[in-house]
Image (cartoon, rainbow, N blue to C red; front, side, top):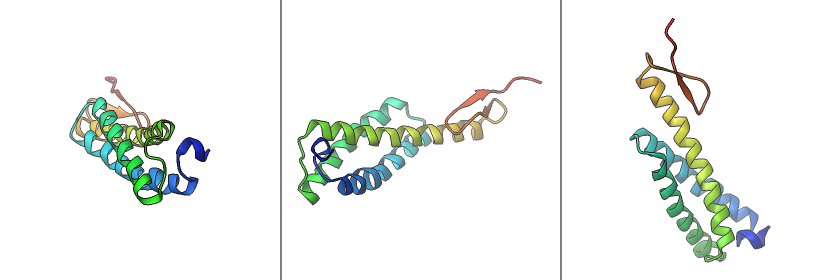
Length: 115
């Protein structure tokens, strides 16, 4: 597994999941709060993936230019950011337009039916 990540498991958890995952969560929330489209989240996640690889290389002597490591790190970052984006967007839509939409789960909403 360490050969795919380009670093050790504790470094992956610390840098990618906790540190960069927090940045991805905040990015998803910020973009949903400002009503940006989902493709902005994906673009910022690609950049966060590069920053993550740089931190792994600079702080822990991991492999910076390892494609599999970048793809795995970016996939984790995207999962966190998209989750935060949908959570925030569902909360915002139903709070801002309570007469039109109702929440049906943590990530989704639906149009209210007239009674």
